[in-house]
Length: 425
Image (tube, rainbow, N blue to C red):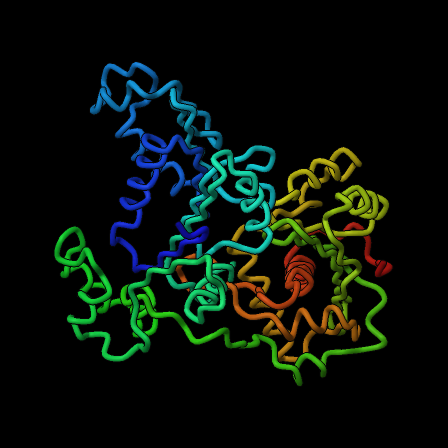
């Protein structure tokens, strides 16, 4: 049995049914403890519901469809985010979304990583640790997903695939339904070649509708299992335009806004400032970029000391953002509009506004190496399904340019102006 196993296949082709079979076999016949993880919580709850179809919603469930399977259940835990099913033979199934610390502190025999195209290195470290001391001494990792697109956050899945295809790594098995090139996307034979359930559970008319609404590359990825060529960088900000905006003498007085951006994986945070004078160009710069290993006390203290200066403080990022907001409110930043929590549409607007300002030469920045790198090495990170985007990068920390964009947007859109004259820092 291979330790690592990968499955790449277009959507709606029965990957979940295969995982159900592996889970049922492992728990019933091998007594395995299994951790199932997915990127989205909705995916986690969907599989939990499907597994409950076999084993029931509780021990001695009179409504269970398969009483002989329910008889093997010792308990079912249904608390949100802690779903699990335990068996009399010592087996167990844990269901979890992925974070940088997912399920640390206990051990399992099998780890199933669904939606593996979104798996990051930080998440992988936490997940791998759970099976490093497999109780049955025979650990297995199963990665299932679809070819990652430009908007996906992880590159672990692609790395595993590369190692398997080049035969550089011997502990990996890899199964894939795919095409090598975009080719003729309307050739229906290729549809059947890459979609094993087409004509069975996947309706061919649905695929015909898909090709009428997607561009060729998107269709090839989603329905033909096409993997994009090895990562190609496409910068959003033009180097010459960015360099023209550099200055050594920015505006000194005006309306001030701070912005805090936490990275998606909670590893780093950036603090930016923007100053908008009554006349002249708005200026942005990075104040700090740090690892989150040291917590947020320094950040809260820094902002609270300057609470009378800023028109608003924008805070974005799921990790630690609300904790910071509470700390700031406890520190006296309670005025209406003094703290801004951007919505996804605001984040999209911030990126577009800053990009346009750079192109038009309507913003200045110090020649800060870290900000330069973040700005020039960031690409478009898609947000939502309507073409919205912000900055993102698989190569550098994009929180610096994201924070700068939020600061620029905040100072340009806020109606608050506690003081007419501001000192930048």
